[in-house]
Image 1 (cartoon, one colour):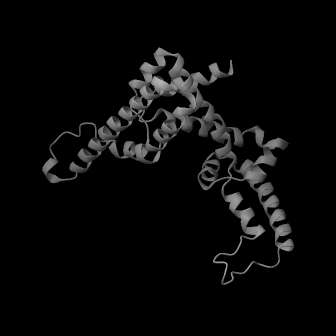
Image 2 (cartoon, rainbow, N blue to C red; image 1 turned 30 degrees about the horizontal axis):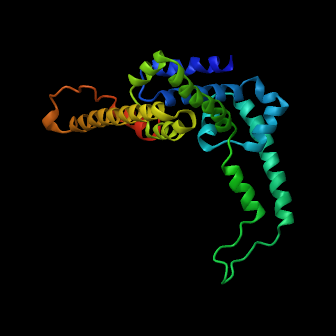
Image 3 (cartoon, rainbow, N blue to C red; image 1 turned 90 degrees about the horizontal axis):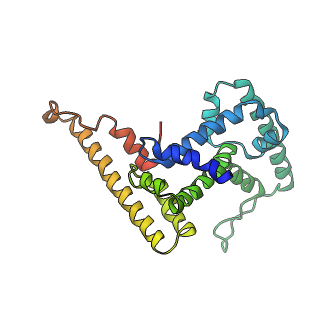
Length: 239
């Protein structure tokens, strides 16, 4: 039953007219995670414990602020700041001496304070929530590719993938497929990626040409939105 539930957003993404179905899925997950975090859930003890411990990356903190629930965000950040200060004060007191660099040691070992801060920079409550479901979506793509001819048709007529998600599918394929099915998938994936990257790249070239007076009277063709589409193809930026 759970697998069937995951097929709905995967099929919806491949039905959408977009440059990368995986970007489409991730954007939807991001919106849901922001809405969840800023909804009534932020008052629940287990959620507050997680947001206090993990914090947020810069991108998602900005999106939380744009959500307009300023009181909710203030309460979340207050408990996060309280935990961070408490943890750092404890570490700072127990590690009063900073390791020095000697002639034989080119780099000093990181102090407990720096280690804590490095770990904090790498965690984000929203990212964790997105990735947990996104991983299931990836598994579902391969499940559908193996079991549904209808989905294979959707896959083959899609507009390809951004570079980051092309990498994810290419890397994950051997975990879920084998033999001829794996070879067929990689061949299809490569063709989708390169053909559609070239399509967007050519649209981008025409967009650039339109700024040249020699092309002023030429039609725009499919280039008017070439720049945002190129941004999505290269860096998974979906506005």
